[in-house]
Image (cartoon, rainbow, N blue to C red; front, side, top):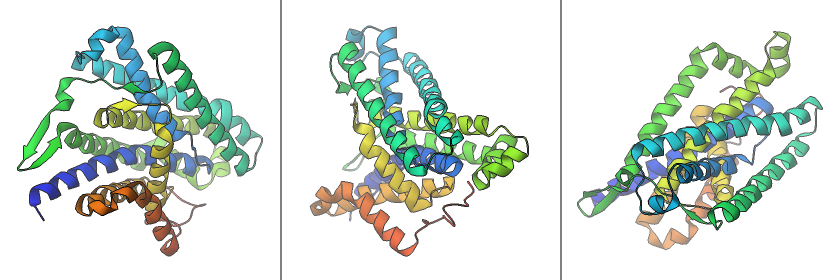
Length: 316
């Protein structure tokens, strides 16, 4: 086994696992808060990249973008605005869809159906806007040339983006965990995940807390979508379906309801998906199936996931 090839695959697995982690965190936080799997979360991820592309097109003309003439300043500003947009989109989804159902104490199956409906709506809206505004559903994602730099280690090739993504995600996850452990809002959110009725009796605005959860989780997903579009420079309305399912699998593998578990599950999934086909090319056709094979294997031996204790009484 060549060490340079191992390093290349290892870095790629860290990068992929980091992207899954940004989405899996949202799944686990929303589930811990309202006990619903938000299957629209993967679509929110892709909307981050989609809105960033649209904003860049509004700031520059499309001809300059297609010439890959995007400045780092413009790219950063577009990403910030896109992340803010999807954060507000996540809050809007809660306010318009989940909150009325929670107020009516709707069954969980109703909430799940609503989540699937929101997912289809976001995909269809993406499709309509892309066809009318950009001339097609499948779009190339443009970014500053810096992100296209390739590093060489012997025979191995490593993109600069594959190194940046894990670092950025590590910082984002560390900040989130610190807030959840030390800040009053984080402590209130953790209490909410234990007993929402008790938190209400203490005079805490639970709707505001859940809105914050949707805001933060959507922001993380939006950042993940932008990084994914840089790493694999194309976007389409249906990319979020499979990405979301894999991130959900990672959250369950790590223990849904646990932020640390979501991150661990994501890195395990990224490692398995990248390393096995890399060293056993004959398994390449099974790459996308590994996530769900691993999920079934973990659930057979530990139904609550690696760090999970109880699906119904779980803290962050």
